[in-house]
Length: 387
Image (tube, one colour):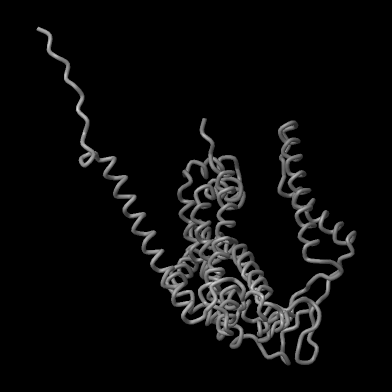
C-alpha cells in the first residue's frame, strides 16, 4: 500500500520566526529614526525662535582669545584656533602613547620579576594608580608637581640642555628648517633602517651568521639622521635662563607637562596589567627552550617572550590608546588648549554650542578611527597565520 505524499505546508507569516525577527528590527529602527527626527525638529524650532545659527559659519568669526604658548592672534578666525587645538591634541596624544607604552611595558615586566622588591614596587604602583580617578592626577600634576616641586624662574634648574621652572620646561630644539622637513627626514631614515634590517636577515639566512638586524638598523637610522641633518642645514639651539624667561630651545607649557604626567602615569598602570597578562599567556616551554639555548634573561624576554606576548596585547593596547586620546580632553580643567578647551572658549564667546561641540565630536571620532586603523594593521601583521 503506497501512502499519498504529504504536501508541504507554509508557515503563516504571523508565526514565521525569521519574519517576526525582521519586523521587530525594522520597528526598532523606525522608532530610533522617529526619536532622532523629533529631537532634530525641536532643535531646529528652538534655534529659529532664539535666532541661533545651526551651520558652521561661526568658524569665520574672530576667535577673540589667545592660546598659551602659541603666537596665534586674537583676530584669527575660529577655524585657526580649532586647528591649533587639534594639533595640541595630537601632540599630547602621540607623546603620551609612546611614553605610556614604554613605562607600562617596563612595569608589566617588573610585575613578574623574580626580585621580591621590584615585583612588589610594581604591584603597589599598579594597584594604587589605576584605582584613583584620572582627573585627580591631572590637577595634582599641575598643583603638586609643577607649582609645588619646580622652582621659580629666578631659581630655575639649569642643566645646560634642560631648564625647568614653574613656568615650564625648556628643552633643545631645531633651527634652520621646518617640522615637516624633519618629519620627512625621520621617515626616510626609518626606510633606510628597514632596508638594512632586511639585508641583515637575508645575509643571516645565506651564511648562518647572527643577523643583529636591530643593531645594524639602529646604526643606519642614526647615521641617516645625522647626514640628513647637516645636509638639509639643520642646527640645534639650547635653552638658557634670560631674566624672567627662557631663551633658546622650546618651552613645554606647564599645563602640557602636567597633563602629560597624568596621562602617562595613569595609562601606564593599565598597560602594565595588559603586558603582564600577555606575558603569562605565552607557554612556559618557550622560555625554557630559550634558556636551553643559553640566552640571557634579557635576550629571552626581548627575542622570545615579548614578540609572542604582544600578539595578545595589541587589541587591548589599542583600547588604552583610544582612552588616552579621549582622556586628553581633561586638560581643559588646567588650561591646556586642546580641542575641548578651544571649543568651550569659542562657545563662551558666542559661537553656537551644538554645531561647535558636534564638530569637535566628529574630529575626535576621526582621530580615534585613524588610530584604530594603525592598531588593526599592527594586529594583522603580528597575528599568526594558520595553514
